[in-house]
Image (cartoon, each protein chain N blue to C red):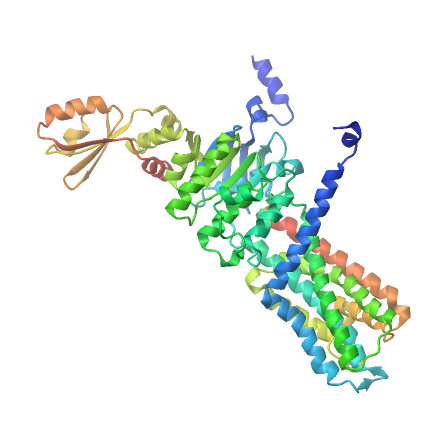
Length: 266
Length: 332
């Protein structure tokens, strides 16, 4: 025991241990989610299937000069990561909260952040898998041309997009009873995606829906995705980034309040 | 003398010496849920180092709430909880405690081995994997998914998670629910061996036999209150005293103790005659058989045998913990 070891707030071994905990927690969260077929098949399967149906089938179509297969590649990448976050974090956490597993975890020496980070990173990993499959299908099956920078950008937005929706999942997990969580999450996720132009080009949506869309976080993620492939206004980028950041903070804050309230009654 | 006491009260947390040395304690803790439900009502209890303490009580007595307070999972409405002399929320405490809660469902698509490895990883000096497998009797199921396990196997995995970090203080909330007799005995043996390694254990149970078999001290809770506290033998005799005088308030209970026996026999004597014998506190007649609770069994017997020379089938029993428990928790 040297004096330097004592003067550090956290000895090297502690930092190392905590880092290992984060890594292990994340790895097993991902492995667990992957093994849960009901989750992994539907979360990956739906955006891929929709893209095959609406993107690849309409490979020759263009709307207002935008190639549909190219547009939908970006929008379903957003759809995929949003689903992975809402179901992975939201429904997953709601179930673990209801079963008492979260309580056991909290009673353990696990750093609470490791638990949340693992869920968030796992959701993003699913998003990356979905985006990867979509890029393959798009370039090989639908004749979409993506430059390396665009491809890189779509993956980047998948990473970025995971965070606010992981926060939204956190909030939903605090509010929803576990047994009805999957249904309610779908009732939020699907209409929200539709209204934000994730399923079809935004310009084809009814005008009133286009006015509602800026109030939805998915709209801003979709616009950022489209910006990457040159299908959205570059001038609006900062607005969308700050909107997503705002939503993330709002969800986090509300989740925190809900958590503290639940604690008082627990 | 009073000055000394005042000085002690002036310690910020009002902790007494033994509470500072204790592994964990609750001091005058009240816990309310919402406005109406009182889970714990001014409960004080202390877990000494190296002790096995059983919290015994029916469902809804407040046992799990007591555990959660000491784990820092919920805060007391009034009063204070201490673990290793600090607030239960102190992060360092968690590295020295292990817990087994009543969990409805653990992540099902993780293998037993993975669950154990994750929990081991949280602690700086965990038990070896092999040791955990042995202690929780997980041999042969290490590679199974948690979701494929039977109820008893799941329970053993949760027990393994409580032991994994080799903690000094272990909370076991209803540890043997759903275990068959053999598995239960094996878990009991493990819990006893924890004490021999100097660990402190708090277990909650409504199995009276379990508290009797394991605990150094039993704390009986009912409706959020500590009804009595003592060694298994003391709790047994207190229970009998209550059976005998079912109206006796709690403070009499502690005084009216030791030496209570149950006498059971067949007799021609009337109920009134038996009631008038020395030491008799209660008479229970079922068919031909009479059961007498006596606080002075020798005196009772002497008079009884003198009165009825044809008395048959005499049995003398110490009141079972179960009787003690039931009489304690049903009085109000």
